[in-house]
Image 1 (tube, rainbow, N blue to C red):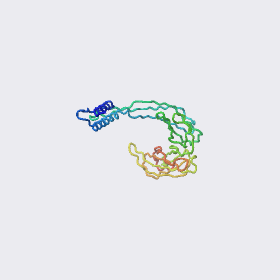
Image 2 (cartoon, rainbow, N blue to C red):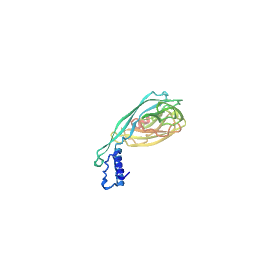
Image 3 (cartoon, rainbow, N blue to C red):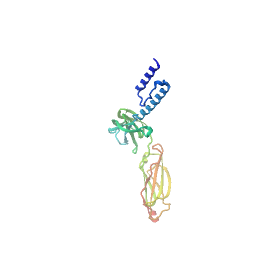
Image 4 (tube, helix red, strand yellow):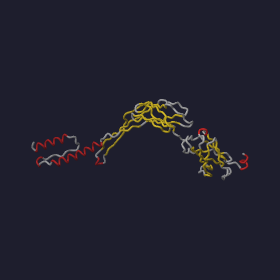
Length: 294
């Protein structure tokens, strides 16, 4: 094959190739610069690749649907069956205008596949919970996939069956886990003699253990910050009630006072973190004579 025929064949192949940029014309009267043609063809291919990238279909994502399932101490060991729905979203992109003149890639999302599954949770060989404890799980459908996880549980649980396309989850307990203590298991009252009394609802479940009570006595000032009068921590063996005498602090006649408090269980039954702060009733301090007569 002579050079002219080779050039014609090469030019024909370049015209037939899927390149969006225009290939420069070849002047046969001045000879053929093969390296220049290959270089320009590569540059045209790069330009075309950028256009294809700008028209890339984009990505896919799914919106999971989750339901929390909770079991109390006296609840049945099987939950009702419930429905989960997960939506797929597809991102599509396209090129607008010439990138050299402010054009760029624009993207939007459209709905894709919709997924629907029925699910339930059953606890096999269920173990006893303390009255304030709960086993709480989260069941999710993400696209076509089902999953379950513990939010807060009184036991470690192993999966017996369920998952993937099977929404009938069956769990079995293994070892016991200490949960947080009852946030309202100890309730306080402040009387007019400024004596704080706290009643322990669950004392019988903590034999031989210790309780810590943080307390802060405050003056009630309407529409303003309540100043701290006294604060402290009481540590005692668990009992049905606890008392703190706050009467030796300085009080103002006719003013109301209250106590903020939280408790911590020290032992093996519950976690040893403090509960959220609670408040007693607001009360006005009685005169000294009335206080001594109580």
